[in-house]
Length: 261
Image (cartoon, rainbow, N blue to C red):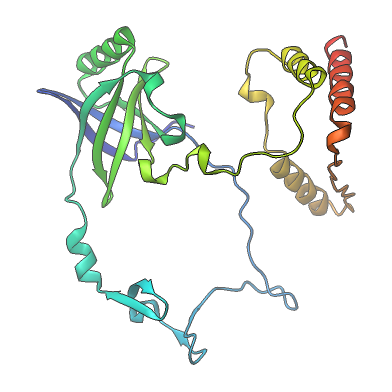
């Protein structure tokens, strides 16, 4: 199936402008269920209901409010919020170029391809320049009433734009509670290193699937054919601290056996 452009824009780098078309670089394969009434199997729908009267409310009669304290909220009108929306624009403004290693991977969110929109020579000149300099652009743009910050990079000979989270959305690792328990023994560390080494190899994303989705689709297929599915629940085994070395050794032996067929 051919990719369809979902938006058009212009990448601006100083005085240079590159017209582009934006395509989604990912596709969702999530499973979507219909909700049915338990007794008559008729489809059901959700309604907005007043918490005071339990009466249904039309969406047109709903107003937005922001809680500021317990029992206190600031009412916001639709017109007030619309005035704060960014002005629609086709400009993707690159503000600076950075080394890719300087960008925290936790900031990356959703990838898009940027295809050429008319000026092929200028587009692929931008691709060549980014590849040669091994840099990544940081850009700002407005799309569908929302402001974005993103990373402009090259992927397989095409420009790619990845939306980025803001710094305040990232939780630092030092916010986690430090691990407790006894100190690891040298034997345990050595076996963990050997286990990592035995599993080392190239990464092939096609080897990894959404196993839950596959099981659900298999279940659906069997029920369509009138067969009774057999469902086996997965139960993880608990390992105590004093059993860690034994568990690592067993994993190492099992991994070596798989590697040798």
